[in-house]
Image (cartoon, rainbow, N blue to C red; front, side, top):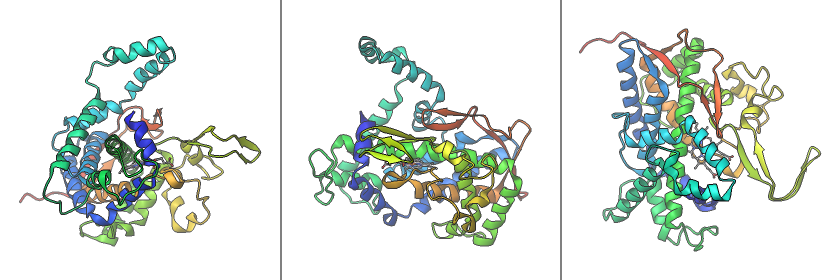
Length: 394
Ligand code: HEM
């Protein structure tokens, strides 16, 4: 129900305005830098022993800390405690084995009697506490605590803008039930979808990017050189990371080959005929992002990893509708800028100190599975990390 509400409210102008107004309000980059330093320290502990990093574990804790800190203004500190409840519950939600249980539940739900039984006996299907319940309760507490605050915060975050929107006359959303702002359920739903979407997609992209850097050492070295040439030892910021053109091309090429969201859906708002195919009004359409981005008509030699496809010169030739990793149109991913910023800042910190190295057990043709609309490696990736420079003892 909450997700459905979020979807409905997400289409409103209000939601877009709330999120767009975050960017100038807060200096997220400081916070992302702090999280990136912890990520680097955690990876260094492994690199010092020449070990392998369970990339998703570390990157997941990193993106969880970034999204909870920037959107909700709370310190979850999951990077200091990888068993933290926020991360462990998020992991259960995105566990690919859970999809099979959900599939059985979906099948049973076709029959009205079994459907009622499934709802009454949810624990038959899961031995764990329902992770959605954990998040809903946590979010309700976070919203309640924020509403009780009497001293205004120095910086406005996503949560504060939503809380203000509940009562404020400034935000008029014609899609909201009372026509004046968001209902309490809509606020909870927005937060839920925002931080689950922000956590998983970015962590998985960082995982695929790390894999590509290990498998293509020349690309990794070119990015390291670019960081040195363009920003030297400066602290990464929103401004200076925009000079890292080759890094951006590599992120996009990673997303092209491994889009963490493999498909999106739309409903035809009117009857249209496209290339002889008529789509009647009200019919659902699935856009196969993964297949479009591996179609040789749009990307020659689609299986080849080639970041230069996204260089300025090549971009002019590209069909603007062919790169769909963040979707397209009015519902384009709202976290795109945050995701790109945090990936770049994290990579600057990590690559200054750590080199990712390919080992024999890291396959060149990565086995992938689509879990729902998500793309994940069949097994979580372990990548060897070594120190880029010899450390001197202080
Ligand atoms: C690499 C990281 C990410 C990828 C690949 C990604 C991808 C996507 C895609 C494909 C969509 C559907 C767009 C469409 O239907 O056209 C989407 C929607 C969305 N994303 Fe992301 N996303 C990422 C990061 C984030 C982050 C960091 C956040 C939160 C800050 C976020 C929040 C959302 C939300 C709330 C929506 C729904 C927007 C709407 O329906 O209006 N995403 N994302």
